[in-house]
Image (cartoon, rainbow, N blue to C red):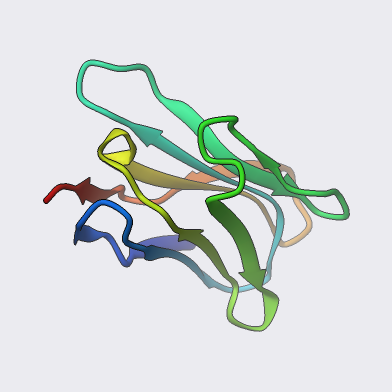
Length: 120
């Protein structure tokens, strides 16, 4: 079994920065792809950033140049560095990891979601 834990959210002023972390734990698993999603109240879920193994990262137009997705394979952790935050970035952020366990089929595992609030 694989567990996913998100951390790093909170309240930040406009123009500020936050770094979200998404850590996977378990045994005999491989991460094949990553996505960070967000959902603001009354809005549809949006893919903010993502990548699959061996490919370049993709970003929503609304965050290009401000957000950066990265990973530390030694820690099985994925990050979302968010800079120049504005109130429109306020949302619950979710990470989704495409993982295979024991070489079996790839499944998507979701983090618990973490609140990011941008407000003065």
